[in-house]
Image (cartoon, rainbow, N blue to C red):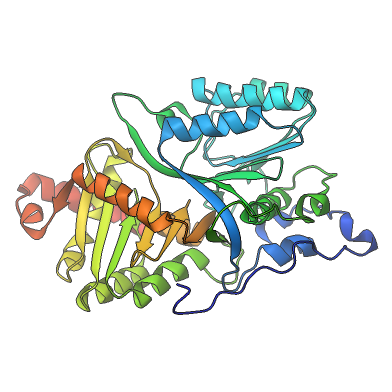
Length: 419
């Protein structure tokens, strides 16, 4: 990316002090969908135009659920000042109890702990356990509960972000939610991509969390200026841009980033996404890249898919892509849940956005654009390993389906008109 378009670097590490009343947070039921301005410091870091890279970051990838979730638990156990956890799915199973227990222990050590979960993604979470957290002084907020009068017209506006921040120095994001299925097991191993990051980009992730917190009407007081006033020191050699997205943004940043990457690619593009229903513009960009000779590989969830109907529905989109040279693979060694894109082995996108319209149009997401530091080499190794556990889908395989299978696929394709 940097060879094609220079990327602006961060403003100085300390933000200007907010004037007078600027530190106080306005409260409004409209805030969660962007109708009330965010504090200036958050607006400065959560930009809606272009990419703003920071340098000096260190990243570590987790390619299965258990190591990634365990690393998050280990970080929470080391927290001394603050823990901010934002998740789409929060279960009350064994994995969920591990995290709730870790948050409770951190609060008892004196850390400021905040938990933000999506009300739909976390349906069924044990309210008794959440009450215990609140009694310990932990601030717990549900994003966009459907029971509220406003906005009943926007039930699909979900918080799909997964962010953990500890002491303002270490952050996590990627595909992992909090539940036993993500922890993984022998029956259905969970293949995901999660990132641990240290360095200046952690402050940008903190700003994204605060944006979500303000939008969800998280309780005050919240010393957002202290959290954002100083970026962590550089610890590595990875350039990183934190790219938040959501329905209240002026542009659909995740979708446009994918399209831009496809249009600029010259040799090779790899995508991994469990859910594939990207819409007309992304489909056109995939087709155009394939037609001009770019080697485009699309890795989707296969036999372990947690939504079998969607797996069938995707097949209605595949013939037009296959005809234009796009290669499609289905992961067969468990549930493929990673959200990764790699362009010409020069830069990558890792985060929470699926290649579907729910992510591109309706959900609040966050992605990392990464360059340097061996990132693309590591992700390339992961793609190759996944390819060895995948099945190639071609025109012959689609045509070999029996009449009943084709009928089921056609019926399932109707789902794509609703998602």
